Image (cartoon, rainbow over all chains, first blue to last red; front, side, top):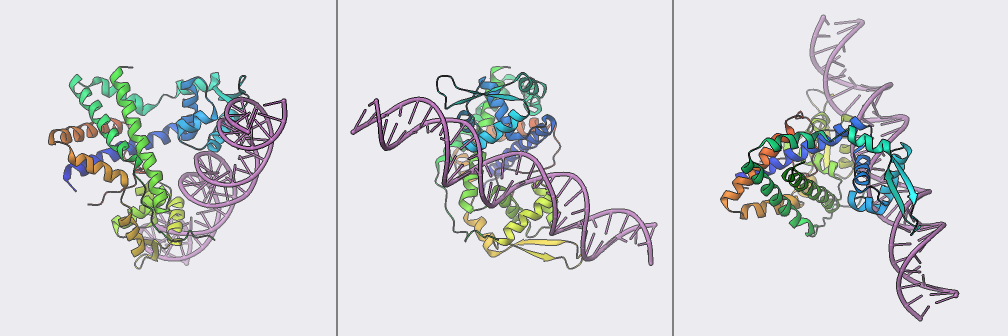
Length: 158
Length: 158
DNA sequence: TGAATTTCATTCGCTAATCAAATTATAATT
DNA sequence: AATTATAATTTGATTAGCGAATGAAATTCA
């Protein structure tokens, strides 16, 4: 593999690691787990959301979304309300406490990044945006590739 | 927040999302979960490793490392051997099957990325490397380099 | 209209990951 | 010899997540 490819992959991994660490820190700081926090953010950003919305945006199954909402509801961070028009749906909305929690625990990584990014000269900001978008496009291009299925052997059970 | 900052954050999220999807795809393809795959890669890259090594490199607790090694051992992908010199330690080493699994399941995301990256004109490659490193540095500015638990699944092999 | 189908949310049963604390065995130190 | 340190494991708990099944409501269609 070429040197530059290697270098770029390493750089990418550093970025991923930083975000992973950040997620854990944030989780500890708020007393919520990362998926719970994500759900709360989705709900707060949208004003209200159904479990189905949440499931789609958070990238988890509906059952999991329900379970996560359970946790948040138990902590008084969100409320559930049956839909008026369509009684099958449940609207999940943040409580005041939920909103305040998000406000009080702003993403430190995002903050750090924003601050530094905004201090960069114009040309460099442009370069970074272009590069990130390029990389994102490249990574998403492969998302549709079929997964090579391997015969790893039977799944063991005890 | 400025527009460009916003744009760059969105681009970053797209990258993260792609890697998450990739981890799941990979997990399905190999029949292993992401943490299991990471452990196998660590072990294979080093030739052999103790649970403590694994714990450090994967960024999980020792108990978790032991549990993950259990799974891999049950599937015949790694072996455990007591240390000769120091009988407290356990050396975890990949089996032939384990090595072959890794060889047969190259990271699809990494592959896609590499292929496209290498097709880029020289100046653009340079730009991307520079931008990624810049971003990595910015994100890591506050954080300590501690736990490299990556979704991307590949530990450097040179 | 009434029956079949679809759509949502939830529940249930199960597996995986993870940690902290306790335990066991071995090594090193005093 | 006794103490302390280190390595791995076991134990007990929580969280996340999936898939299948269930129930309720809306929609389609005959």
